[in-house]
Length: 286
Ligand code: AMP
Image 1 (cartoon, rainbow, N blue to C red):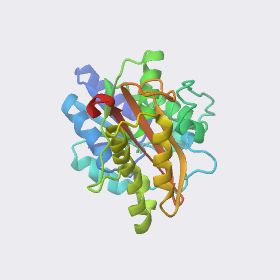
Image 2: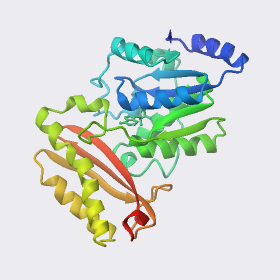
Image 3: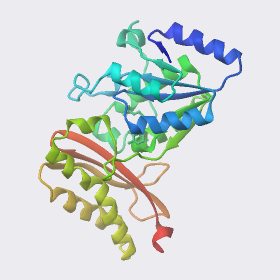
């Protein structure tokens, strides 16, 4: 595996590979590599000649009171895991390499960035889109791989790529969960053992929704209230949002459509966790 810390270095390596007509799959990450990231790597290996992963904790996507400074980092461990999973190249730039030269540009996808996580984390998706535009220009991959754990990010990136004519296919892959159902996240290490158990309430709320749908409860507001009641029944929980939205526009639904997204952001202690599931009314005979 090749490790590159400089933009010119990685560009040169990729230029040579592209001359040989190699297809390039890209997996952007903030590191602290886990099974969720590896699922993206595996798909990228299946579909491309060369796989490049980036590790960059992007300061632009963190708010002033968020966890940028204490975001989990472990370069040595990450490199070993990526290497053992057959990643070809890792791009691991310092902040200065990415934003050093009086960086002034911002990429923003309107509307889609203002709801759900964008509402609670103003500027977050502008930071995501800005860093991804930069990474896409540096790497020029054929395909880039994203987890549906960050469903809103996936929708926003697809829109950005289409609006700005990036010649990149955006691939979205299913949420990887621990055996007990908790969506894997680098932030899960913040959870105390007790809060780790409580955190299962996010995933378990989806079962509550299933039961409500099976019983013919088709009112989004009733479903959201039931979940809220359930989650707040646990100690140390605080709801950031519980939303039922259109799967493409992310607009809130007052009435169900055939497919809808249930998206949750919940604080367990001080740790903010997100999860989501797409429901299809057809599967509940509604
Ligand atoms: P992050 O390092 O948290 O920025 O995540 C990098 C990529 O991995 C993003 O596309 C995430 O959506 C994806 N990812 C993170 N956790 C999971 C998971 N549990 N399952 C699938 N993809 C994930």
